[in-house]
Length: 324
Length: 182
Image (tube, rainbow over the protein chains, first blue to last red):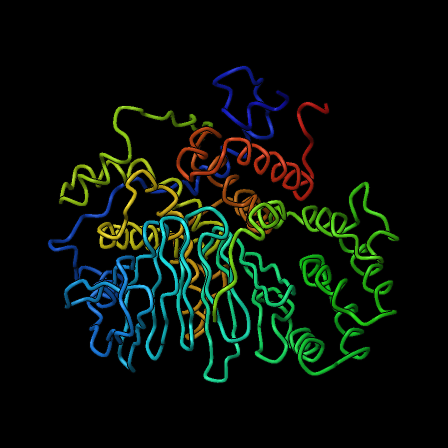
């Protein structure tokens, strides 16, 4: 294959590429120091400020974490609390953390959730490759390494469907949610309304409106405000005008969502703005997009390079709705 | 400086055995895992946080992993698990930095890198996320495509696509030409 040097460094069939070799020489200056850390006894150390901070975080007291029994089942998740013995959260049970509480929850064998203080979650389902919980309020950090849609979090305003990723999810007392995706991507869905949130993006959701439109975490305040107005305050034309004017290439995924969320008659403006930032791939036509052709919309998304919709579609419908 | 050789993969011990031994307290096993994965972790962090913070954060990632090994149910998934810890650590860094004061990248330091090297690194760091990490693992850490796939848990096809697309964009940013086009 052409350019194999990039793949194997010339070990196999690739002819050396002088430009890549030059980059290797330049960038080799930044290569990792390969000296392993000296492991402190008991995995703790005060040898540096950072390591001390780690030790402190590991030793966070788990006071204020408790399980509220509301049923029992053989399936469940392991709950670890520093300074306390491991416990088990059964299906139907609720885990609450108090003001100083913190818990690490093993999601079967597919991931880990860090539960921050003042949070309440309920375990709805725990099967080998199907895990579902409800976050009534609070903050969790989820890291999932299972195939897409293996892990779902129900919120009062939407369901967050994992697509192989790491994210932070917060639900306020009024049921509004905010997700920040660190790696991979997450899908929000409610009553057929979907939001795809890639790494580096955030998305809000409200009980009265469902999933909002995702945006990049470094979007300008005016862009964020316009999006909030558009999603949740009937911002209409004025908000849309700001979004279309301020959008940059990295905001293409936001505009992609607007294609099917804008009011009737606004679609051509959204199409033109998105096409200027990220031209549609071959086979995706203006006419098709304006009639919301699902295949064309998916192909355009795939062209953005943020994840393949086939992952989402492949598993779509295989997960029964929560009884929530 | 001569081009660094691409690191070959040792098949002598698999991750499952090493992770199990490390969990049981074997420092030698942990050291082997460190040797095997330090390039990957370093590449992930270099893609996401200021250069000056990377080395400390690499140490943090491995110590955090050591502390959490009991929570790893599938020892064979060590690489993917470590990827998420490294990315989380980078995310935590930025969250903490927002709470305090984030130092600009160009704060004077004793480190001395050539302007060309810095420019190349910054060009990679401005690429889409999917391309940044594999390119840094390949060009900085000297990992082969096969090794990147084996360490991260990604498919070789996915790594190959991201390497080549990323390299194409990098050439454009640095105004380089593909050797095969010359």
